[in-house]
Length: 473
Ligand code: BG6
Image (cartoon, rainbow, N blue to C red; front, side):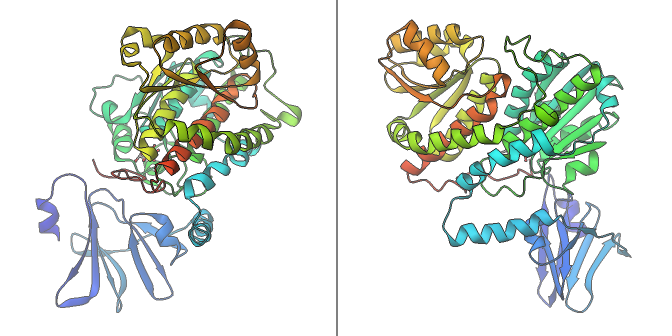
């Protein structure tokens, strides 16, 4: 196996069975993405903790210079350069055990993971914003001149939304980077600069290699969902979202959980900086702290009502949308990141060509795409951009674009005041306070993609060509 691994390039994990030694399994990997578990005479090797948790309550990782032999007679033996080594086993987080029970229940009842994970969000957002103990060493963040956030896919879009909060509320300069671009760049950071790595799985190779590319720095914090995942081995600090396993490949509950964790970091900076521009910048008047210190008292109730509204109204609109092949998602400020995530969801689960774009960018090229064969989904919350956005939507309607407006009653009434509503399709969701709208609008774009996929008879949890976490380049 050492000879074989010497000939291999790139990232790999291999489990081998040799003829003449059928009693043993051998495992080795270049990326320590393999985990080992043992329980009641059962020895298991797998690439994810949930599988291991079905058989074992402890686990250990296979390191890249190691060969592991699992055999009935000798159990688990780990070799480095042919020498047996002792391995430290850690307790598997109970979240996995719960997940496998949850999995079987859903599988038995033939419920899609995606929609059941969408329905978990009201409690998850409430828990992280208002209840979860959030112990990070904030001093390393406070002493840094700027923050750089590095991530992939939905985690990258969550980071783009959070940048608005960091800049507008805690007044901290933030760069947001795509991991696969960041890792190959000669990045120039000062020792105090702070880097956040966002990854629900904690196993995404581009984000891990991005972290490795700057591992000389001290100020690295990762926000992950999977305890014991590789990224937590490399970052100096880790925050766990603890929202349970996410089985649907398309991120939903982990996306809003990332938003909530990042909002808590912004709030922590404000509390420690004794400087807080909450509301002033974005012209919304409300105090952050609700009763007993909650960030947002009844956010669970608000998101519950948004889901109820969408369950009634989205199936009809998604039937209409499912007849089109091209979509543009548009938003401004915090809404821009929501538009990008909405487009990604529609691509991931409904296989429709969708592009997220900043509303202000439309006139600089993309407007050329608009005609009566294009659906434009517009994120139009009650913020200081209402009038600007309404004007832009009329420019799209003037080019026969089919506009679906995700908004609330307050904006809708302004729309009525301002113009005739023909040619617009509205989703008037229950309103939410100020800068918290990405939580509810993200749920809406998730449900829109889910129901369009159902209309197109697509299996939503295991979309083609995609994986839950990309552990190889
Ligand atoms: C992709 C997933 O493989 O990786 C996406 O399909 C996800 O849903 C992306 O957003 C990044 O994953 P992670 O685990 O690093 O957040």
